[in-house]
Length: 207
Length: 207
Length: 207
Image (cartoon, rainbow over all chains, first blue to last red; front, side, top):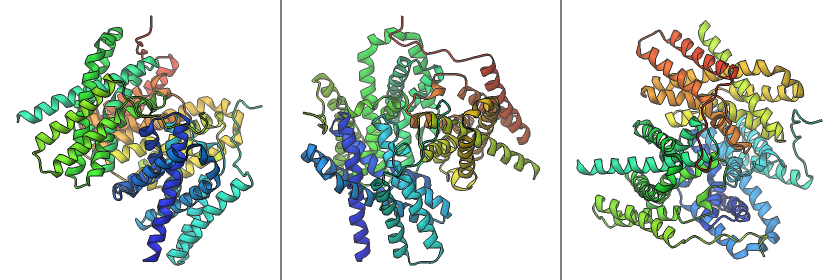
């Protein structure tokens, strides 16, 4: 039973990092404690909840109090560390990327396990990883960041495709999980390191 | 059968007050009649709908036309009274708080009746009471009010906890409903009367 | 089997036109390719997805890859034609209106087939036709257009009522579909041609 526990630790780390990102952005907009907590929770579990609603199963956070508790710890973390969070930037980038990788794998896996085809699994992996950040940005009244900057959702798509490919080839599930999770991680880290981004779609008014 | 009818009247009052709040904010943004009606409906039933989707049951408004009709009456009310609504401010505050209390109790009760644990019931009560206002603010393109001002959702949380406590102690359901509803009402009224609010989460740029 | 194929062609045209409208607005806000694609997809399938979640069935786009592929074609169309899209304005208005008509009919039909009453079917038709555009506007951080300008959702409501009326009178399903779809089309075209719009709800601050 070593492996599930390892997954649980990654899940906690990812949830924590996602919640921190929501709470920090909410605090920059002067939300109160409750508002900041809600934005943190929505960032952490919004993607998984939307996925579960579409798959027709009970949202993950309703089956395990860990997600709400973990977001609460994230709130205290931001209260305690405040300005010093800026020095934890790199750590949180790594944590956030671990969350992205894990959430993508979990989302794709869940869809495949329910008998949906690969392309649905890829979308579900991407929704699990990236939709929470979209909800966060809607709540703080900003245009969703992932639609404009950096390669983020693309990492989920590539990870989902890896998962599907390995699963189709009959590779062992644990290896499939690790490789596809690692591919999400790698794409995201390389994109940030080399400032890679997708081309902007040229507007009709542009010269 | 006296009690259900009483609950129905409270439900109507709450729906009406929630719809009025949505329609007034929409009119301030110069929405047309249809847009104002939709914002009213979403404010009134958005919380219950999100709760029902998460619980996996048919959204409440699809089982009873009362909610859409009641929102329609609210639209006519705003058209007829227009500027004079300002003099009905206190009445609407009481109505809105009745709605908040009732929706919280109904939400928590529904989750418990479906076998979910207390903490899910508290969240469901809060979503039922407060999520409609969040959707309203997203539609009128403002940062949700309840994340920044006043104690609103906290009243739902306290009411949900009361419900769970009394339910756990085996108190009669009707008393449990009344006490937890009243606790929501009391917290909200006291918060507004004494201008209580939650502390703002200090942003990282603040001095 | 002539008729289903005809419906499928209309469905493709409608999805394409809805996706184009989302992608063009996203490009005006300088979204990247992925962001523009997501906004296109959400505009095209958001209404149907919300309807299916409320009806408790698997969202339509998860059962057929056509919707995601069609949105991808729309993305390439916008990339290739760019500024020249402005000359295709009238074509896209017709396509968009075909989509609105078809989506309304499909949505109302699905709700009636599942045994819901007429008024639920009318709402479901309207949600199928109009909610995608609301999600689009939330994502690009604008107040939803259909709440402020032009008669759009009203066309869906009228179409839904036609559907219910003909269905109730026992008229053949294919005729019912055509007449109600055509009524949506007609209302929308007349509204745009004669610049008809719903009255603005007068705000409380207005003189």
